[in-house]
Image (cartoon, rainbow, N blue to C red; front, side, top):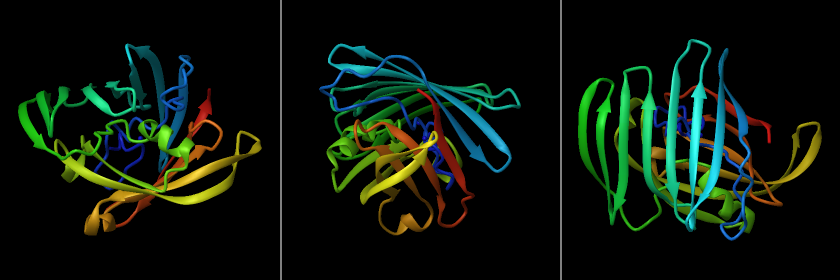
Length: 237
Protein backbone atom coordinates (compact mmCIF):
# COMPACT_ATOMS: atom_id res chain seq x y z
CA UNK A 1 0.00 0.00 0.00
CA UNK A 2 0.73 6.27 -0.85
CA UNK A 3 -3.70 4.99 1.22
CA UNK A 4 -4.15 2.54 -1.32
CA UNK A 5 -1.24 3.76 -1.55
CA UNK A 6 -3.11 1.85 0.84
CA UNK A 7 -1.38 -0.92 -0.61
CA UNK A 8 -4.44 -2.28 -1.36
CA UNK A 9 -6.84 -0.07 0.55
CA UNK A 10 -9.80 -0.97 -1.59
CA UNK A 11 -12.35 1.07 0.29
CA UNK A 12 -11.57 3.90 -2.05
CA UNK A 13 -9.43 5.38 0.67
CA UNK A 14 -6.36 4.25 -1.18
CA UNK A 15 -3.19 5.92 -0.21
CA UNK A 16 -0.33 6.11 -2.66
CA UNK A 17 -1.86 2.97 -3.85
CA UNK A 18 -1.53 1.59 -0.31
CA UNK A 19 0.18 2.63 -1.11
CA UNK A 20 3.55 2.50 -0.52
CA UNK A 21 3.21 -0.65 1.18
CA UNK A 22 6.24 -2.44 1.60
CA UNK A 23 9.86 -1.36 1.40
CA UNK A 24 12.77 -2.96 3.21
CA UNK A 25 12.80 -0.92 6.37
CA UNK A 26 14.15 -2.11 9.66
CA UNK A 27 14.33 -0.22 12.91
CA UNK A 28 15.24 3.43 12.32
CA UNK A 29 18.62 2.85 13.96
CA UNK A 30 19.39 0.05 11.49
CA UNK A 31 20.72 0.78 8.01
CA UNK A 32 18.21 -0.69 5.50
CA UNK A 33 19.19 -2.31 2.22
CA UNK A 34 19.04 0.02 -0.76
CA UNK A 35 18.30 -2.53 -3.50
CA UNK A 36 14.78 -2.42 -4.96
CA UNK A 37 11.95 -4.52 -3.53
CA UNK A 38 9.26 -5.79 -5.88
CA UNK A 39 5.64 -6.56 -4.92
CA UNK A 40 2.66 -7.83 -6.87
CA UNK A 41 -0.74 -6.41 -5.99
CA UNK A 42 -3.83 -8.25 -7.24
CA UNK A 43 -7.29 -6.76 -7.72
CA UNK A 44 -9.42 -9.38 -9.39
CA UNK A 45 -7.67 -10.26 -12.66
CA UNK A 46 -5.46 -7.16 -12.63
CA UNK A 47 -1.89 -7.54 -11.36
CA UNK A 48 0.06 -4.37 -10.62
CA UNK A 49 3.84 -4.47 -10.24
CA UNK A 50 5.16 -2.18 -7.52
CA UNK A 51 8.87 -1.42 -7.14
CA UNK A 52 10.22 0.35 -4.08
CA UNK A 53 13.66 1.93 -3.76
CA UNK A 54 14.93 3.34 -0.49
CA UNK A 55 18.05 5.38 0.23
CA UNK A 56 19.49 7.10 3.27
CA UNK A 57 19.15 10.89 3.28
CA UNK A 58 20.55 12.81 6.22
CA UNK A 59 19.01 11.43 9.40
CA UNK A 60 16.06 9.94 7.50
CA UNK A 61 15.18 8.14 4.28
CA UNK A 62 13.95 8.83 0.76
CA UNK A 63 11.54 6.26 -0.69
CA UNK A 64 10.41 6.02 -4.30
CA UNK A 65 7.51 3.78 -5.35
CA UNK A 66 6.84 3.07 -9.02
CA UNK A 67 3.56 1.30 -9.90
CA UNK A 68 2.70 -0.05 -13.34
CA UNK A 69 -0.42 -1.82 -14.63
CA UNK A 70 -0.80 -3.82 -17.87
CA UNK A 71 -2.87 -1.02 -19.47
CA UNK A 72 0.16 1.30 -19.39
CA UNK A 73 -0.83 3.40 -16.39
CA UNK A 74 2.14 4.52 -14.30
CA UNK A 75 2.16 6.15 -10.88
CA UNK A 76 5.15 7.46 -8.98
CA UNK A 77 5.29 8.35 -5.29
CA UNK A 78 8.30 9.83 -3.54
CA UNK A 79 8.42 10.42 0.22
CA UNK A 80 10.99 11.94 2.51
CA UNK A 81 10.85 10.28 5.95
CA UNK A 82 12.35 11.33 9.24
CA UNK A 83 14.39 9.04 11.49
CA UNK A 84 11.20 7.57 12.96
CA UNK A 85 9.85 6.81 9.45
CA UNK A 86 7.16 9.49 9.61
CA UNK A 87 6.44 11.34 6.37
CA UNK A 88 7.84 14.86 6.03
CA UNK A 89 7.02 15.46 2.37
CA UNK A 90 5.41 13.60 -0.53
CA UNK A 91 5.11 13.96 -4.30
CA UNK A 92 2.66 12.01 -6.47
CA UNK A 93 2.46 11.65 -10.25
CA UNK A 94 -0.14 9.71 -12.24
CA UNK A 95 -0.19 9.41 -16.02
CA UNK A 96 -3.96 9.00 -15.86
CA UNK A 97 -5.64 12.34 -15.20
CA UNK A 98 -2.94 13.56 -15.33
CA UNK A 99 -1.97 14.33 -11.74
CA UNK A 100 1.09 15.91 -10.18
CA UNK A 101 0.93 16.76 -6.48
CA UNK A 102 3.36 17.87 -3.79
CA UNK A 103 2.70 17.98 -0.05
CA UNK A 104 4.61 18.79 3.12
CA UNK A 105 3.85 18.76 6.82
CA UNK A 106 3.78 22.08 8.65
CA UNK A 107 2.94 21.46 12.30
CA UNK A 108 -0.58 20.06 12.45
CA UNK A 109 -1.30 20.78 8.81
CA UNK A 110 -0.47 19.05 5.54
CA UNK A 111 -0.06 21.60 2.74
CA UNK A 112 -1.07 20.09 -0.60
CA UNK A 113 -0.84 21.69 -4.04
CA UNK A 114 -0.44 20.91 -7.73
CA UNK A 115 -2.81 19.38 -10.27
CA UNK A 116 -5.09 16.42 -9.71
CA UNK A 117 -7.05 14.77 -12.51
CA UNK A 118 -6.16 17.79 -14.63
CA UNK A 119 -7.51 20.38 -12.16
CA UNK A 120 -5.51 22.80 -9.98
CA UNK A 121 -5.34 21.94 -6.29
CA UNK A 122 -4.27 23.93 -3.24
CA UNK A 123 -5.38 22.72 0.19
CA UNK A 124 -4.44 22.85 3.85
CA UNK A 125 -5.42 19.58 5.56
CA UNK A 126 -5.93 19.62 9.34
CA UNK A 127 -4.39 16.76 11.33
CA UNK A 128 -3.11 16.43 14.91
CA UNK A 129 0.16 15.48 16.57
CA UNK A 130 0.14 11.87 15.36
CA UNK A 131 2.54 10.84 12.59
CA UNK A 132 1.75 11.26 8.91
CA UNK A 133 2.30 7.81 7.35
CA UNK A 134 1.73 8.32 3.65
CA UNK A 135 3.51 5.15 2.61
CA UNK A 136 0.99 3.06 4.50
CA UNK A 137 3.01 0.03 5.58
CA UNK A 138 6.73 0.60 5.10
CA UNK A 139 6.23 3.33 7.67
CA UNK A 140 5.15 0.64 10.16
CA UNK A 141 8.30 -1.49 10.02
CA UNK A 142 9.68 -0.09 13.28
CA UNK A 143 6.43 -0.73 15.18
CA UNK A 144 6.24 -4.26 13.76
CA UNK A 145 9.83 -5.12 14.66
CA UNK A 146 9.24 -3.83 18.20
CA UNK A 147 5.89 -5.62 18.52
CA UNK A 148 3.95 -2.45 19.37
CA UNK A 149 0.36 -3.33 20.35
CA UNK A 150 -1.40 -0.39 18.68
CA UNK A 151 -0.73 2.99 17.08
CA UNK A 152 -2.47 5.75 15.13
CA UNK A 153 -1.52 7.84 12.11
CA UNK A 154 -2.78 10.03 9.24
CA UNK A 155 -2.66 9.52 5.49
CA UNK A 156 -3.88 11.40 2.40
CA UNK A 157 -6.14 9.67 -0.14
CA UNK A 158 -5.70 9.66 -3.91
CA UNK A 159 -8.83 7.72 -4.95
CA UNK A 160 -12.53 7.49 -4.16
CA UNK A 161 -14.41 9.47 -1.48
CA UNK A 162 -11.19 10.04 0.46
CA UNK A 163 -9.18 11.58 -2.36
CA UNK A 164 -7.25 14.71 -1.39
CA UNK A 165 -8.44 14.37 2.21
CA UNK A 166 -6.48 13.45 5.33
CA UNK A 167 -7.92 10.43 7.14
CA UNK A 168 -7.06 9.05 10.56
CA UNK A 169 -6.26 5.34 10.92
CA UNK A 170 -5.70 2.93 13.79
CA UNK A 171 -3.51 -0.18 13.77
CA UNK A 172 -3.68 -3.00 16.31
CA UNK A 173 -1.62 -6.14 16.63
CA UNK A 174 -3.35 -9.49 16.06
CA UNK A 175 -0.32 -11.32 17.40
CA UNK A 176 2.42 -13.45 15.93
CA UNK A 177 1.81 -15.94 13.11
CA UNK A 178 3.75 -18.40 10.99
CA UNK A 179 3.25 -17.27 7.39
CA UNK A 180 3.86 -19.45 4.35
CA UNK A 181 5.97 -17.22 2.13
CA UNK A 182 8.43 -17.92 -0.68
CA UNK A 183 8.37 -21.66 -0.05
CA UNK A 184 9.08 -21.50 3.67
CA UNK A 185 7.39 -20.74 6.99
CA UNK A 186 8.32 -17.31 8.33
CA UNK A 187 7.66 -15.84 11.78
CA UNK A 188 5.57 -12.69 11.34
CA UNK A 189 3.58 -10.10 13.25
CA UNK A 190 0.08 -9.45 11.91
CA UNK A 191 -1.62 -6.04 12.19
CA UNK A 192 -5.14 -4.99 11.36
CA UNK A 193 -5.39 -1.41 10.12
CA UNK A 194 -8.70 0.43 9.78
CA UNK A 195 -10.17 3.88 9.47
CA UNK A 196 -10.74 5.28 12.93
CA UNK A 197 -14.09 4.90 14.69
CA UNK A 198 -17.29 4.04 12.83
CA UNK A 199 -15.50 4.55 9.52
CA UNK A 200 -13.80 1.20 10.10
CA UNK A 201 -16.94 -0.38 8.61
CA UNK A 202 -15.89 1.06 5.27
CA UNK A 203 -12.43 -0.49 5.19
CA UNK A 204 -9.94 -2.59 7.10
CA UNK A 205 -6.99 -4.66 5.98
CA UNK A 206 -4.45 -7.09 7.44
CA UNK A 207 -0.68 -6.65 7.08
CA UNK A 208 2.06 -9.19 7.83
CA UNK A 209 5.58 -8.09 8.78
CA UNK A 210 8.59 -10.34 9.25
CA UNK A 211 9.26 -10.52 12.97
CA UNK A 212 13.05 -10.55 12.61
CA UNK A 213 13.38 -7.18 10.90
CA UNK A 214 9.92 -5.65 10.38
CA UNK A 215 9.95 -6.09 6.60
CA UNK A 216 6.51 -5.95 5.03
CA UNK A 217 5.64 -9.29 3.38
CA UNK A 218 1.92 -9.48 2.68
CA UNK A 219 -1.39 -7.61 2.60
CA UNK A 220 -4.92 -8.99 2.44
CA UNK A 221 -7.78 -6.55 2.69
CA UNK A 222 -11.02 -5.10 1.52
CA UNK A 223 -13.09 -5.90 4.58
CA UNK A 224 -16.07 -3.56 4.94
CA UNK A 225 -18.61 -1.91 2.65
CA UNK A 226 -17.86 -0.71 -0.89
CA UNK A 227 -14.58 -2.56 -1.14
CA UNK A 228 -13.34 -5.47 -3.20
CA UNK A 229 -10.61 -7.82 -2.08
CA UNK A 230 -7.01 -6.79 -2.70
CA UNK A 231 -3.90 -8.85 -1.97
CA UNK A 232 -0.26 -7.92 -2.11
CA UNK A 233 2.94 -9.90 -1.59
CA UNK A 234 6.67 -9.38 -1.73
CA UNK A 235 8.10 -11.32 -4.70
CA UNK A 236 11.71 -10.09 -4.81
CA UNK A 237 14.10 -8.69 -2.21
